Length: 132
Image 1 (tube, helix red, strand yellow):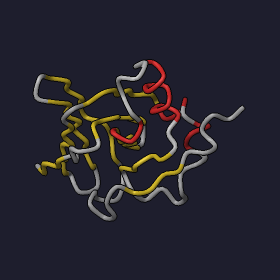
Image 2 (tube, rainbow, N blue to C red):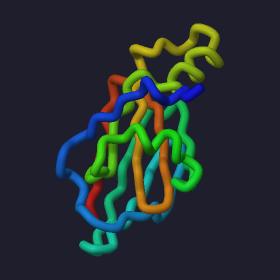
Image 3 (tube, rainbow, N blue to C red):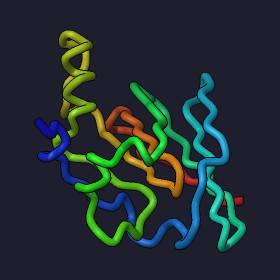
C-alpha cells in the first residue's frame, strides 16, 4: 500500500528561493529552534530556514524517497512545500497518544538536489528565512 498517495504538496511561498542547484549545507538543532542552511550554487547564496516549536524532523537521501517524490507537482520548481494529509503527522499524533492534535501542527517538506527534509512544527509559528 502506498501510504503517501493521499498526501498533497503546495509550495510554501512561490519564488522565495532561488532556482537551480540546491544542497543542504547544515542542520542545527538547538534550544532556540531548528536551523536549516541551504546553499544555492547557481546564485552562490545561502538561505537559513529557521523553525521554532519543532516537533519532528528527519533528513533522508532523496534517492530513498522515490515513492514520496512521485506525488510532488512537476516540474519541482520550488524548494519548500506544505504537506496536507501527511502520514508523518498521523504517525506523530498516534505516537503522542492525544498530546498532539493534527490541526495544531504543520508538515513542511524541503527538497534539495540530494536530500529531503521533513519538519513538523506548531501551526502558530511560521518559518523564518535569513539570507546570506
